[in-house]
Length: 187
Image (cartoon, rainbow, N blue to C red; front, top):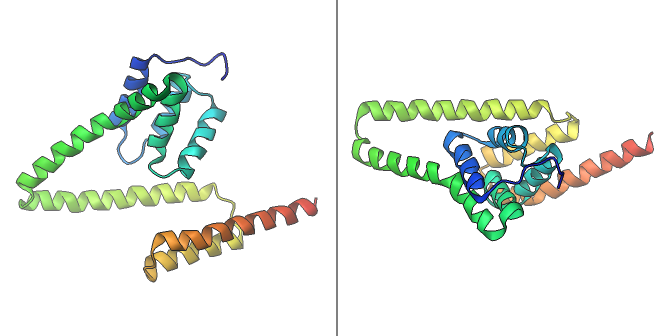
């Protein structure tokens, strides 16, 4: 760990992740990055990227996996529990409250209209995130072909996602390595 980084107390760890959970609607990674790296300096850029990579390959939400790793790094098992509890407490209370309200008011036309509007907004946010991420991907005919094939297999043919990923994931890694090797040989 870099000596210029700050080691949070258990209370700071809980409250830091509580603030991420409280302010994050529809995705918290940008907020987590700003809080963990820029504001509180608990991690540097490289450490954040490594933990994000770890969080992405493990089952479960990336930010939950990262909170476990970060909490554990600073305060062991207790820190992992505190970080996850901080991250999940506010959303849990909000969701449970919303479920109780929905259960009581679900038949009202205004509630139904609001839910349809929220679904449209969520679809728009997802599309914006996909387009933003797509700008950073190196476009190559193999990459585009695999993306289209994945979309067709899951979205059109309605094949289960896991088998599709188990086939196309290793294929994409093999093609990327092959392309990288051929690029290295041409240098």
